[in-house]
Image 1 (cartoon, rainbow, N blue to C red):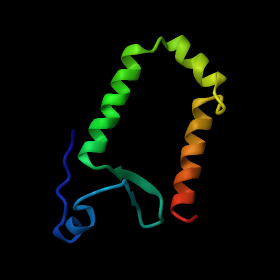
Image 2: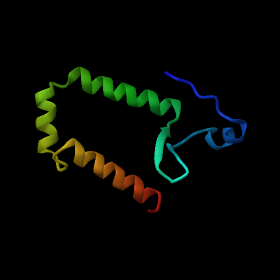
Image 3: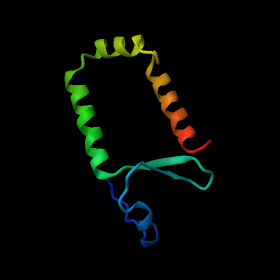
Length: 88
């Protein structure tokens, strides 16, 4: 993993991180997200469980049978929810 030293001026903004933070460029485009360490570990644990137990063909079938129908639709819904949570 690469590391990026955090300037002192930003430290108070990420101290005691409780929910994700979107890092944006000057135009407002998201370039990265910050997650609390315990959230990151939980994501890795969930992904490992899914990857270890899922047959790829069955996983594709489950996604296709879900209300979303595709990974692209899942991502679109996640982006929509994030926009709503930001008040967009």
